[in-house]
Length: 442
Image (tube, rainbow, N blue to C red; front, side, top):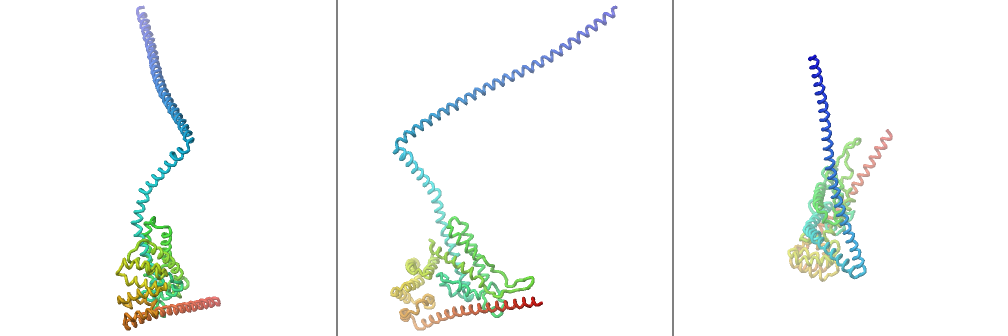
């Protein structure tokens, strides 16, 4: 009995403990949920406060913007009223509020352009332009050398056509005639009948072309200093000088015909191109004459250009000034002044200047190129006899006859070569026709 009570007591205690444990677990869970809800409530309260703060700041910003907008609207209204008042006073509106501010703005803009743009560019132009003009003069002299080479009768003396080259009197026939005895190189001297009279000038022509091309490249580095017409002229000169090859050989291999050489080994095929280049040379000559750059060499060249281009009055004026500037070149300049007076039918003045030249005992041989134009005049001959011996005069006439005969012989030889080339071409044509007929018969 006592044992059963103990068991019952034990069971009762166990059930009580179990019930207490379950109740404790339930309380812990509820407490945890309560804490989470409390935390969420605190977070929501903080967010709500932040929103209220931001809303307040936003309202303040909106209020400020509205105040600023209202202020600007008021100012705009005041300006409109002011404009209305000004429009009612034309003198005030035009002179004070338009003309004076406009003039002041334009003056300020002009002053800024003058100080910071125009003057620096003008100084740069004034420093660089003389150099470019000197380079253009160098191209001019090289082109003159180029044409003098083409027109030379031999490789040891200048051509007989320098006056024509400078004066613009060179014709296409002159160039074609002079090219009859010119070839590119020794490989074109394959025809033994004419090899001794052919004059190879290809390498010299190439040297002139290369130097002119190099000088034009230097000039184009400062193309902003040049005018469009100058750029176009120099580019056209370069193109014309680079049309042909100056180094190719005479022989060429053809698949069916084998080695071939030209019927005409001369450079007559360059006639048209060289004549067009001469037109560009004349244009360049005018530009060099009009350039501001003037040193001794350029001045001397331009005196010759003025005379041979028949600008006699200007030649007299310029030579008179140059005699004062370059007294050592008096005799050279005085010759052209004499010739110009003769061309203008001012014979008495010309004879007075010529008498001064003869008094200085200038060599007649050295002056033959000048005297050749007036030596047939009786007064010139008489004046010359008064100052020079008969022997000196005979030597002058002999030198003039020699040069005249040399020029005539050169022209005759060129005409003979042209006929020879034509005969060779006709012979070659007949042989080609005979071969074609033979092939047809086969």
